[in-house]
Image (cartoon, rainbow, N blue to C red; front, side, top):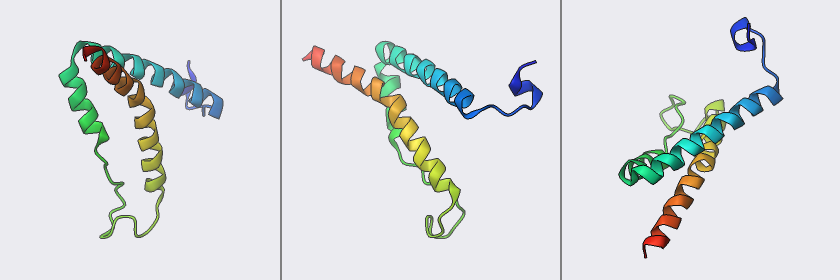
Length: 98
């Protein structure tokens, strides 16, 4: 029985290791798709580069700080980290085409 199935908590190091592995897989997949389907990658980058405000259900979002803003900042940082290799591949390909 694995920890995730047994209800046991994962340590910070275990969580970080798992997230790092998932990040590497996603970066590889994104780079692979970038090499095969430039239009799909353009659509993905456009979609992911759009800012999405945290949902704090306030009339004036952000007026009352909540944990959703910390989650938003972390998600934005993660998106940048995942997309940077894809953007670099696109820049490199554009330079080679010139």
